[in-house]
Length: 71
Image 1 (cartoon, rainbow, N blue to C red):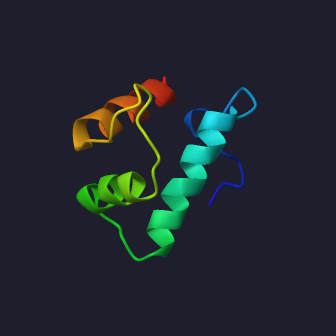
Image 2: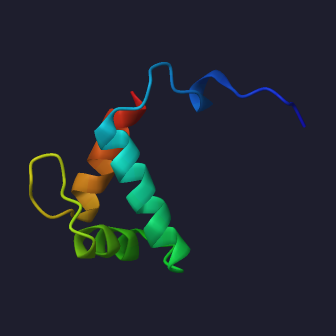
């Protein structure tokens, strides 16, 4: 196994406060034993973590945001 990350596995810029909060919240939901998209979306909403437009997360808005952040 290579000790180096693939280019697509790195983040070129420092994380924004939004990215830090979202990633921490995702990990919190995962630690609670949830490991599917519906549960993740529900968990984020239960934590009061809103989608970028201020609305509750949906599966589609979460997928869209992950795509946007991955570009």
